Image (cartoon, rainbow, N blue to C red; front, side):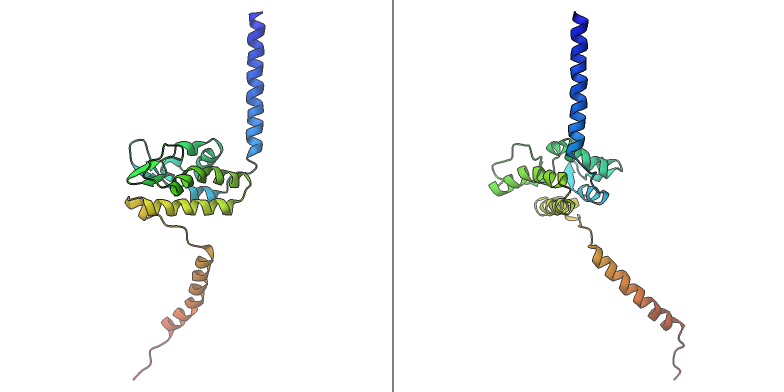
Length: 183
């Protein structure tokens, strides 16, 4: 009798885990694009030793896997990613009263909103949230790293620069091969 009960409990656990896996995988339809994951990993986080580092330092070379963990499995709850007066806070921390209500609301709501956008596969919106978080870190952090965070250059600007360079190459070659005028 006892063996039968144990088997039934094991079967229920197995079915629960299988069902949870199916539901969890269905809730996240597509993997996060590599560019969005790399963008997310530019954010700074304060580690357990009190050091402020880029999330890339924790991603071990796999930004996409790390970002998906943060978004899918509530890993964001423990990231001390929001600076205020020299301290760094996670979205689920008890925030100080010196932090105004608008900032408290932003810190508490940004990840749930960003996750909803990611689940809907609106990656441009997710990138916009990340840009705002990077700006927040630049503005409210007093670390050197935060001031050196740079947003990636727009692709159109890079293409324009390449186009201009390719137009100038023949001109430079012509100038280099032409003979100087004699006096």
